Length: 237
Image (cartoon, rainbow, N blue to C red; front, side, top):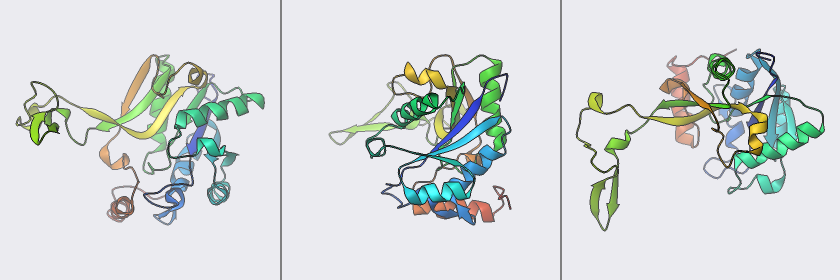
């Protein structure tokens, strides 16, 4: 709880990853990938409940082994085309029917293992201290949009009209991208939002690149393992 607001964390974990089968329970640093997100939530004292939303029995078993609650996601909300916000709306209705009165929901993607409890807490404090509807985490953009191009009929043109892609990095305007690590939002805002988890009066927390790692392929796993071995991230015993 924070500022009298009840907080729950949801970790969405489909079983149908094609880029890396069973990505969400792939071992990383000696434990399943999803366990990193569960651990960060457990260390965040403001969180009252930790829920894994999944359609898969193997993932559910791993989640329970790491002391998270499991809510079974309907099959039609676990396809490649399904939007996570629709799964969250469905979960909200289920929780409300059970008497859950949470004010704030956190979405913690299991593919972002290196976020810390401080990152989560920073989102919650920004949200409550500024009376915001939603907060999301960002990182510096991998490529500045002023350096992007579009190619039509084999002809390159700068993507942003008038942009100068040849400027030194220091002279480019700062640019950021969502890193997918944390979304914090008023749970009832799911009823009025369209397809965005960043809605209403919103805020941003910027995270460093080493904690913004996003796992989607085996190459990402190998990269993350090298970060652990190199001491760039901490592994809890």
